Image 1 (cartoon, rainbow, N blue to C red):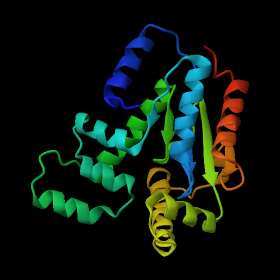
Image 2: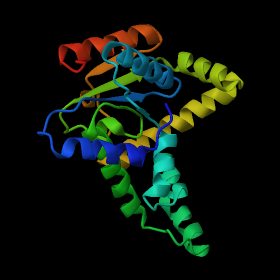
Image 3: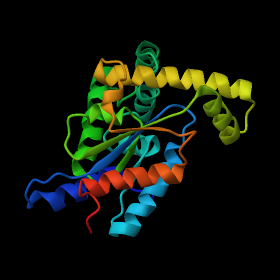
Image 4: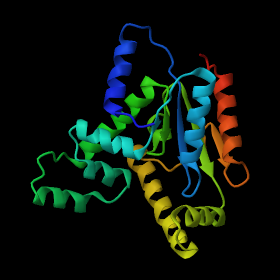
Length: 227
């Protein structure tokens, strides 16, 4: 589902202004590289709509990059942070070219953190990655899912998804895992721990469809699937 994320938040804010404060459910899906987060998020979105007739947007990296333009942040800076690169080289490039929308690395990081928190607070959405579980860990209404699998399975999965050799896939998995671990540290200052999550699932042993069913069961038990 393609949406204007900033407009989506503005519309949600207007709907909630006159109402009482309530817990608004949301899902975060964190994953080891090669696990099927997109497939699971999309299937979950469809099932939620079938059960409740409510459209839960899937909040991806691409949507956040699009929103950055409306937040007056250079999308290059956002992408740089979400990919967890070192900051100094990017700052040197932006300053050298006189980027008129340049903001400090820390300011961009804080804006992103607040933005993702706002997305979660408005509820009824599925947030993939972006350290979503850590950023929203203290918020009521969240169900935090972690997808994991043995390394050989993840390498084979990436090889098939990207149509590259298993050697290339192995390097990609290693590098991406390292970037994501840096991202967790960037937003939380902590190592990733199992207690960040409500549900940890082995994507090799449990199918995408079964994982969706497990998430729906947790949502149902918490009263998050009401029409």
